[in-house]
Structure formats: C-alpha cells, structure tokens
Amino acid sequence: MTARSIMFMGTGSDVGKSLLVAGLARAYANRGLRVAPFKPQNMSNNAAVTADGGEIGRAQALQARAARREPTTTMNPVLLKPEGDVGAQTIVLGQRKGSYKARQYWAKRHELLPLVLAAHAELAADADLVLIEGAGSASEVNLRAGDIANFGFARAADKPVVIVADIQRGGVIAALVGTFAVIDPADAALIVATLVNKFQGDPQLFDAGKQFIAERTNVPCLGPVPFFAGASRLPAEDILALDQLPRGEGGFRIVVPRLPRLSNFDDLDPLRLEPGVSVEIVEPGRPLPRGDLIVLPGSKATRADLAALRAEGWDIDILAQHRQGTRVLGICGGYQMLGRTVSDPDGIEGEAGFSAGLGLLDVSTTLGPTKELRVEAATHVGSGTPISGYHMHMGVTSGPGLDRPFARIGNASDGAVSADGLVMGTYLHGLFAADGFRRSFLGAAAQGSTLAYEQMVDETLDALAVHLERHLDLDALLELAR
Image 1 (cartoon, rainbow, N blue to C red):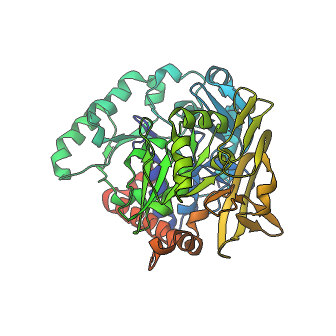
Image 2 (cartoon, rainbow, N blue to C red):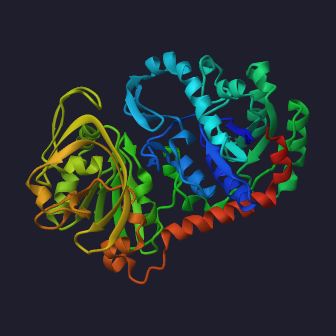
Image 3 (cartoon, helix red, strand yellow):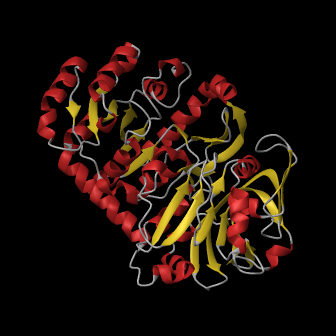
C-alpha cells in the first residue's frame, strides 16, 4: 500500500519548515507509523553522507533520524550547493553531476521531475506517511515555470499542501493571504491548511487573526505553534540560521572566520554547546580576535574562500596568533587552505588555477572531479580517542606533513599535524560529535563536562515532538494527508 503524503511549503526561507517536519516525523514515529521525510530540491551547503553512499541536505538527515530510519539519497534527490554568487554544484541522487550557472540549471531543472517523482514513489512504497518539505517561498511566481521544489512537484504528484509562515517576521496575515492572491488558482487548490509558526505570547490574542486568515483563504489556519526554544540545539540547515545560533559563554574562546562559501558549519554545534566554550563567528570587516583555537571550517570553493580570507587580512591574524601559541584547526576545505598550495587545474570549483596556501602544514592539494563520500570510524592519533565522522570532499592532498596524521582510519591515515603540534588539518566532518574526543581536544575547558551530544539531539527531537503534539491537532493533520 502506498503511503499518504503531505507537503509543507513556506511563505519564505527559514520559516521553520525543516524543524516542523523533523518534529512531526518523531511525533508520528512515536505513534508507530513508518515515516519518511522528503525534499524534492534543496539548496544548502550543509550536507550529510547517507547510508547508500551519497549526500543529502543536513535537514533531511536530521528528519530521517527523527523518523528513526537511515538517511537515503531518495529523501533529497536534488541538492544544490552554492559555489559562488550565480552558480552551484548539482547533486542528483547523492552524486555530483557538475557545477552550473543558475540560468543553466533553471532552464533544465524540469527534466529532473520524473526522477524526483520516482524517488518519492520509492519512499512511499516503504512508509505509512511521507512528510514533504518545500524550498524557499511558495509564492515565487517568477520561478514557477519548470519548478520541481514546490508547486511543480505538488501538482505533478497531486499532494496536499500546508503553507507555513513565521509570525516573528511580522506581516504574517499578509504573507499567508497574499500567497493565495499571487499563485496560480490550480496551485492554490492544493492548499489544505495554513500554519502560523514561532509564536511568542498569549495565543488567544491571535484568535481573530486565525479567523481572518481562514475566512480569506477558505482553509483552516493551524496553530499558532509557539517558538521552540530547543531549536538551537539541533543542526541547522540554512546559513541564515548561523546569525541566530547562541555562541556559548565559556572562557575557552574559539574563533571562526565567516567565509563566503562556508559549508558544513554544523561541525561547530557540539563546540558551542559545551558549557566551558564560546564560539565566535567573525563577520567580514573585523579582525580576528585573539582566541584559544581558530577553526577554518569546510568550504564549497577553497581557492575563492582563501582569496576572501586574504582580502580580509585574516591570514595575517592567523599567522600572528599561531606565532603566539594559538592552535589552528582546518576541517576539509579549511585543511586544504592550511597547506602550501591548492591547485585546481580543471576548474572544478571555479576558474582554473593555483593558489598559495597559508603554509602552516607541509601538504599540497590538487582538486579533481572525484568526490569522496563515506562514513568513517576513526581514531585520533594524539589522544587515542575514537571519532565517528564522514568524508565529503574533492581533492587529493599529499606531502611530508602526512607523516604526522591527525587520525587513523583502519590502516589508512587522515589529515596532518604540524611539527609544533599547534596546527591540525582533517577531512573528517562531524568529529566533535564524539564526546570523548571533544573533551580530550578541549582539555581543561571541557573538564567535568556532561554533554552527551548525540543523546542530547535525540532528547531534543523528543521534546519537539511533545511540543507539536501539544499545540497542533496531529490527528486532523494526518487526515489532511493523502
């Protein structure tokens, strides 16, 4: 029997669709349903490696975890990873297909609709309920032709739609009613409800607002769903959320330069949740403040971000702090930047060419078309503690610095450590989720820490499910699915 499905679209980006789907996935899974999350097309540089050897958006991996099932590439068949202002790396069913300018992709995206529908059908064949998440705004009528992310998919699959709006942005009534006013009537006919999200205050004060929305749209207005304070404890999908994440108040200061093509920034989540740690994301235009640790995270375009780092003068700050004894850690693209050179002879990430690195590690990287995607069980060389992480990178790194590896993966090695031990590079994403390694790496700053990161994520998903059970009629919502 094919599963029932329901789709959640937003009046804009970052209205809370991803979190709602995660919470509903856990809530319905707790009721004994087999739930699967699905997002036809995602645009995010926060990605995760799947059980079937591909990559999908981090939000869909979290939603799969909420549903208590392994993430698969069918849950997010099309993933766009921005590499510059007008282009993106295109991932189809977990594998890189190339990098395209926005106009090139937009002109061809309709060709991916049969593949997207097939992925949904595959999930539906092994589930009772598929929770579908749209992308961006449902009312971007200028992008409607050829759409596969929102109503283009919903119309083709004939799926009911709930429109979600964030009341904290203001104008929530206009956003919901206005959506019906501008979209195609055939699209509007698929909408079965609206939902007001992130409410703060007395919900009864919005009763008249709910009634007005329902009267103007002729569908029920659900909620309002109060703001969920635990959201900051879960991995965020959109880089828009980076500005809203708490930095922590601990005395151990971690400094992170915010580069234009920052990726997989959820690597920092376990660090900012440690009570003894503060994580400061440094915006362009500011010098890097003195820290106990500088972290260079992943990047979707290593050479371009290396140029941006130099343009800000952050390379000078990093080298000066290193001379004064500050530790420096590079993860994936950040690791490549710490080496002597980064070469891109085939123009994989942009214009072909060569860049001098920061020279803090005696390694060099050559970018190539092959992408390494695999989950890893590693051991940190310095402490002997286990790390569970994943590789998601293009490029081969070589040089004498590899003789001092950061980690061991079976008989192979990963990363490099400088002779003075202050500079470290690794391709392992997700490394700080391992509690023992994180505490060892932070030393005195994590002494006495009781943070069990993975357990905390599951407890937060359970709390989110309870939150939605309390503020939404989940039986009625399930009846709307078909």
